[in-house]
Length: 261
Image (cartoon, one colour):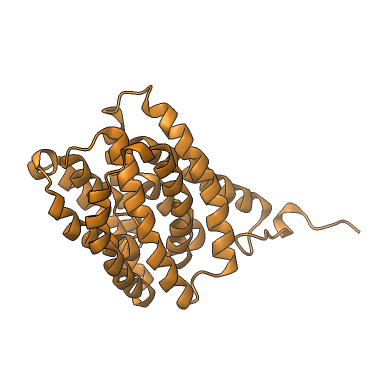
């Protein structure tokens, strides 16, 4: 008797899919993670922008954001270590005062809201980031140290609720006058700390199941390695190219999520 053909095979990762469908989704997730977090290693953000639409497509939004949250611990940890010498601890202090409690609040909203609405909010926020970064306030605003408290609040809530506040926060980090390495290390530590209260809420609401942990850890290893590649690229490629890449990704990803929500 002949064994099951390719069309009868179901994969262990994504449910009742054929072998071809499973391979396509695995490749898409790995590539999106590697590309996104390599860009994050250079520009300080972009990992979630690239990876999240693919994760939503593969896993659905309820699993995508917890998986991304877990993998971001690896990515931000790598960037913090690589750029540890330039970290501005005063910025981290103020940012964390605002970000940690609002990350808890945003996580509570996330576990209660309708997923279709959430996907469309993700798309709208991505398009908002594009508009904001092209406005004069986004280019010329001078950030004060105290401003990192409300920025942390907005970023913590947005990260927990929407998953990808990085492009929005980066505008203010750069407006404060940090050097490239200091900006990447400081922003990475701020974002890494935000993931902790998010994971607490996800765990207490049964969203951080074994499948999510394994997927997040696997992608986190890729994300961590990509941070090293990003640092190498940072010293070799003109930095002005990357904001244009991020802008293009924001537009494409935002439209996709808005339409398919």
